Length: 407
Image (cartoon, rainbow, N blue to C red; front, side, top):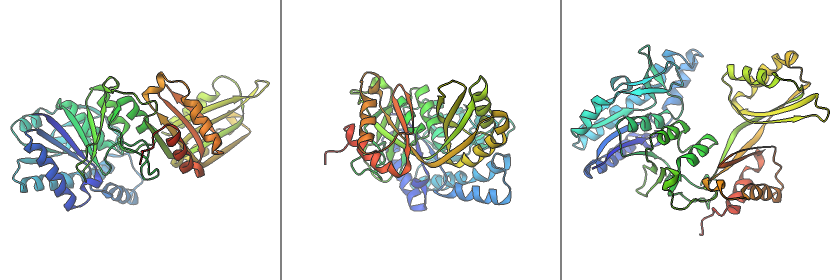
């Protein structure tokens, strides 16, 4: 007997037929003798619609009432799935976050889980009941409903699995697992059987949409095995494990990309202490996350050009704030470009294998693709290029690192 948390995303519960399919998948685990808790998202598109209605009434996206509205989608799916399970003759009931409870901080719209008191549902699970839990939501210190931000149901599932001391957390989606790159763009992309937490975190943080980065961090913290698989077929998925559990470490495991990038360059900044701090402090106060950063100092050392990237949705706000600070910062000009994308090659084998960067730069050069920015970590190399070269760069790099399928 194993204790398993099964999480189903919006596409897996997008209509009543798919909810019935999810109920059959849950029943299959119960029939194996396993103890099961289920975490579900809202039906596909529901949260977007709820957010749109809320924004049409008032532009208050991080408020108590906004969270009340957008969290209601999960209440529908937990009720429907519990009904579907009961219809199959199984003991099941729905649980909202405040009933468990799942405690969070008070940052509405992007709350973080502080603790989970799973004692009540654990007692029910041990006695054979299936707990159907609403993802994406929690309860704040002011006893108001909070939401965990986009992808929050992944975090809900992993946190609940850790609290229940589950043997595994299965994340069901509309793809068969984690791929060497996006199979919708590269036909020769292949599914990865095993991947390390650290690799998955780099991929999730740099464009891969299979699993939310906060969920990966929590899984690694508790050494919880996580499996990503499809709810639409019965093929094995991708198991996310400790690096030491990998039999063979691929030099490059996967290639991620992000098209939601924009580049900002400040020309002619005075090169003195505190200038960069003033720039990034002002952006941080506006909740604008900065990613890649490069600074070029002039030959005489008096002036510098500073280039960085932000999410493309934040580009206008970032430029507006920097224009307000122009007199204080003393830069000559600001240049922005939203027609860029980021490509990241990831693999734990990079730690011990030289030449990974050489392959990347040589391959892109052969394709006539200019690299605008470069950042690295111990197991990742990211480059910023023109967005018009995305498909070409992905295909060339996928082949160059030996990731193509044979067929």
